[in-house]
Amino acid sequence: MNPQAKLVFAISLLSGTTITISSNHWIMAWTGLEINTLAILPLISKTHHPRAIEAATKYFLVQAAASALILFSSMTNAWQTGQWDITQLTYPTSCLILTAAIAMKLGLAPFHFWFPEVLQGTSLITGLLLSTAMKFPPMTLFFMTSQSLNPTLLTIMALLSAALGGWMGLNQTQTRKILAFSSISHLGWMAIVIVYCPKLALLNFYLYALMTTAVFLTLNSINTLNLSTLMTTWTKTPALSATLMLTLLSLAGLPPLTGFLPKWLIIEELTKQGVAPAATIIALLSLLSLFFYLRLAYCATITLPPHTTNHMKQWHTNKPTSILVAVLAAASITLLPVSPTILTVV
Image (cartoon, rainbow, N blue to C red):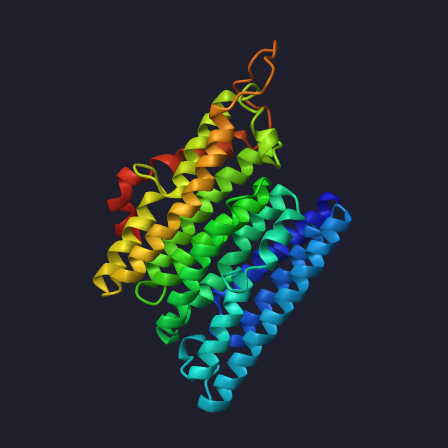
């Protein structure tokens, strides 16, 4: 794909996201989501591989269905209340339809089936866009309508996402599928707290995007798509492999790394709101995700290839993203001590 086309698609993604997050009217928000969908499709299918075409087709069908449901829920609400404002979603049926539609957009269980398959059919950089940037506009819609959403439905979907995201990631060997199930699991943590404290859900999303970007860019730097390749990277880039291990453990939510902060705050908030059983269940379900993060970390650093190599170890990579990887990885590992500052900003 030539640079001019990439620039057009990047500007379209940026403008679509900006339109959605800055709009008050449902039609404008829907327009932004449609621009985003149409801009990402050529990036998914740019390799012309059958797997990529299949991924683009699945993505298009799911996103089109979700967009139609968003339009339907907003029209139903406008019909009943006369309001097109996003924050004035008060009709209960519209709220339920919208929750299902945004869950489909995000890949939240039980509408998660498309996400691992689409991620597996794309490159790592496009997968990064799908896991972070493409989830931001639907998350802002959740944020703006949070006072109207049904807490019971969202709690059930969140626990289901945390369970399925952890359980289905256990036997995967492809890094993109593992990161897809990781994303589904993290979405469960965001969905469970969005009704009680929307700002905390957004903080969780920002930190998740930070850590996931660091992992995707690291895997792209060492050109790793499955666990067997990941096992041989220690001999080539030991420093990057060690950093990847720490970033993965941060993504798992282990203290004293950055990923522990959102989980700690969410459990605290849920306990304050009197839903301690849900907090206990989702905390226990995160152990499933911890297992496959530990397996990834184990493959990245502790295992050695079956033969020794005679070449010199490469302590730095020459790719242009290496400085960005360093900054993101450092932030993914060391932000917990400055959490009071983060909380005052949020």
